[in-house]
Length: 288
Image (cartoon, rainbow, N blue to C red; front, side):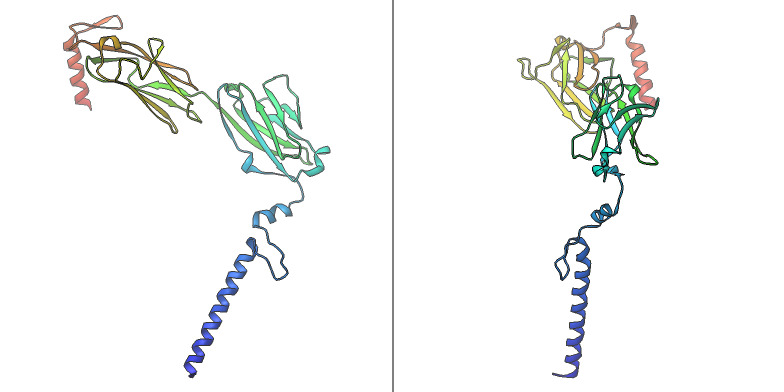
């Protein structure tokens, strides 16, 4: 073997050994094992075992957005409390009036909407609020009776979803056209379970003999429901109401006209002349 070949072989061997050593060192702290077979845990587990006293797990003790009137839960997870529950207590305090709501598993308020929940051998100390109202919004403090006491703040925001129908309160449409109504549910932390449409207080049937009636619902941060009524007839006139499961209903009055707009169209007790309507339409076109 030539001198060049020997040098090349030695360099390759050194490089391979360096790579193997780097991979071995990199893998050991993340579940690998050393020569003696000892297993290494991940970095988070090591950090937890080095803590000697209780601490809050903030990933499981987050702020809460609740629907008006729907039971909600504020959670406080306290780690490393262990057998100290006999000497240390976890409490919930409402900041608005500095009112003590719970201590341990006991509720200390006359408001029966509040209840302490804690399961044995669990790190979670939960405050249940039934039928939350707007006035319940605010800051709630989870306390541990250490010296000095530990505290973690949880913000509760009680909201009421809003319903809107585009074009409300009235819609005028010619006979034979398509009635296209759009209902939007806003400010809801979760989509409504369902949305019903009513026509003159009767639930609209999408498979009725009339035909040509359909609904498309798109759920997301805001939920939108589209009601389509094809080949509109005068009998389709009336009040249409959007009824979400988690919000107040909203209505719109639809007028199906036999032809062109009549000479005088009653609206709010005053007659609108066609010439005035045309002028307003032209003005809108110029502005936009």
